Image (cartoon, rainbow, N blue to C red; front, side, top):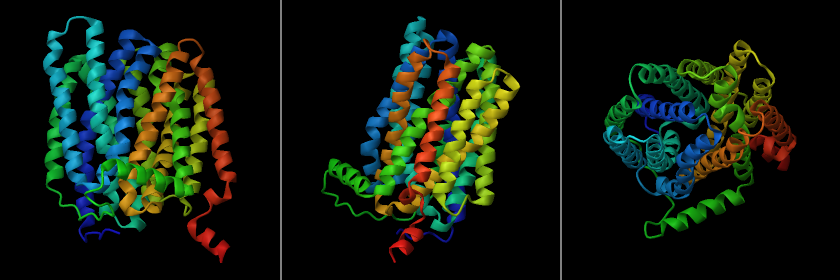
Length: 412
């Protein structure tokens, strides 16, 4: 286990701030692109195409980038990936005035999304694997909860900022802001001296061997394999209720930047509240209980989103859904940080990133075009109900549900 620095609190705060700054810029561009495509096309197929370009490269690179995070400097991986994303965004911003055709603009957005996706796929496993280097294990759940609150507050502010910029300015304006925030984030991260990481990997060994050893490790660790499968199902079944929310609001309640903004603000407010709750409470002593509690209620609230036809009630349910999402996601991250061997953190988080982007890609490829032919509220009701059933099945699996000390006492 890496030695935790005595100044871990100060370093952790600075690290989270650096990532929060870059998150603000990235989210700004993400909202701007998604809303631009949504309002320009009102097409589930175009949104699905955007999602493919945003997540397929991330899925593919995550298998390798997780191994890189275990082998190389996590700090440098984060900085380099941020720089690549900023460079791609700058190129789009410079070319934007030269593009005249709407279809050409959409294609340029897809190409840029591919490059940004590759950068994100390298960055995310390194970021998640850095937290255990800084934070003592007994504080991981609370610190992850506080970080979730910080990220949610940033995400809470981003939709309003994006709507204001897009209303008063242009899509190009958001691109320049993302470049500036990336520069600030890289500067802050450069000031942090991370604890030296240990690695069980020989430098002469090919990176693909690291990837293979990571997959073998997951396969032999039954709990982690089941956890990642649950995470994949969670992402897949959350697509209609979460990732197609903008499309539902446009079709049912009216399409405008401010309608979309209100929904996003309420959702992120719920996520911030969930992170604050975990930061104070710390979750159940059994992390799996916290996880399944969050997953189950995500399913119930998704059913509610599809079943009602009142915008105020829709917003209330969206608020509660945000709380449940934070409970589930933070519990999953903490469980991996606690249960996986430190030398394997990068590879496990890399696979987690691949599960996220891969199952999201499958979900959007399936539910995006399907939403053009079938009632989107009905899709929400069905997928929400299945998600509740998944949570119940996992709760009935005692080997997965029990805490490690419970298993040991059973053996003794």
